[in-house]
Image (cartoon, rainbow, N blue to C red; front, side):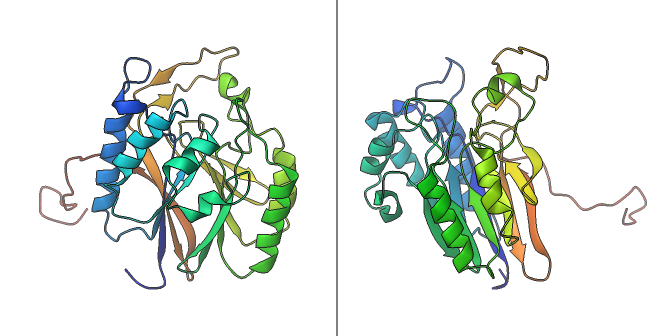
Amino acid sequence: MSQSMTLIAHISDLHIKAQGRLSYKKVDTLAALHRVIDTLNDLMPRPDMVVISGDLVDFGTAEAYQTLREALARLTLPFRLMPGNHDDRVRLRAAFPDHAYLQQGETLHWQVEVNGVLLLALDSSVPQQPWGELDDAQLAWLEGQLERAPQLPTLVFLHHPPFLSGIEHMDQQPLRNAEALAAVIQRHPQVERVLSGHLHRAVQARFAGTLACVAPGVSHQVALDFSAAGPAHFVLEPPGFLLHRWQPQQGMTTHQCAIGDYPGPWPFYDAHGLVD
């Protein structure tokens, strides 16, 4: 990989249960995590970092985090963790004591520079609540990080997306102070993306002068239903992840990638052997 190119893989909403038990008596989230790990391990060029943006486990138990840790041992790429509304900060920290960035402060926000790209992660989880919120201390920290490195292309991660999706039951558990986040982001044009999970669907929206992107789930997806009072259903649509590619000459591009093995690749030739 060219030294001028940076690749950040972004996966979300693992929802691991202890010992690989099924979610909703149907979804094998542990097998789904194994599949995405295999996909990430096989990527060429290799990503510089994998960010996992919350809902790491389903019920925040110590046993579930142990199952998660054992599964992630198969990942051969550097990775960083973030909490979502299904996570427990104390048990997450206890399960990953070697992840020093998780051990500082009450909330689990962190920063790291990866090959010329700054990654800033915010903790939007609120204990025992499905909705998200960023406290004043985190917003001040974000402002300070952005002020110190205006020359670095930056990705800002949080679990809850800062916009409404149109899926009513998910919009009832939003980021409650998205306007406060927007006020910070819009002052710093080096923010290339605001990245999240939570919705279990790939969704994009303009936000605070940049692009907000939601990663699809790595196992199940939230059903696409824009009807009023639509039910909280999930579907087994193809899972995926996001791959963010930075090159100074080209800027930031984001690719939605499928998880698993599919037929191909084949060359584009027609019946006469000519390139299509």
